[in-house]
Length: 262
Image (tube, rainbow, N blue to C red; front, side, top):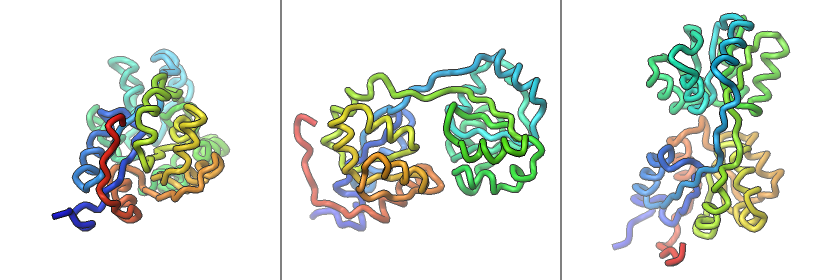
């Protein structure tokens, strides 16, 4: 007897997750438990941009902040890779997303996640809105709305810890899965751009697939790249939100056997 849409709501889904397998494995397993399939392709490579001495000097010059914001697990990893004694953090710490909060907890830092994960949501947090100074720990680029809002009032201590670049093996990895997939997670505008820019033919194919995105801003960016495919909002972004978006929008497909060469 075939599984019903109720027991396999993601049947027929073949989701491309642009994340390293070790980070995407929990989401992959949950998708498989709901009847779908997922493959993981690391889209971006993380390159440190500051030494421990650079960060400590910048921290000393700026003084002690009232609030710190870690925008990603990568920011947490880079901060605690600065050495045995990274600069002291303020008492109030925000981590954008459950994974970031968990990464901070692994280093003994108690953090809270904002109600919304976009820049507007961070600005709306009372502790951030009323702070005299805010320490922003993130990557180069991105969060420009947050940087502009806090920078205009002189309240921002901005310490970029890393930059992102397309993973050197991205094109080869996508070649193996692009015709297998039928939906894509766009965890950020930069991530989706890296996928589409990896190769013209690959990009043209990916632009036809429905996308799960973390914000309206990312969806708007996807449209500027030429995608007219459905875009499903998953906010606040995380594995649970991705699953909720897929369950809300995916229409279970007949069982399809993947080609032997996929």
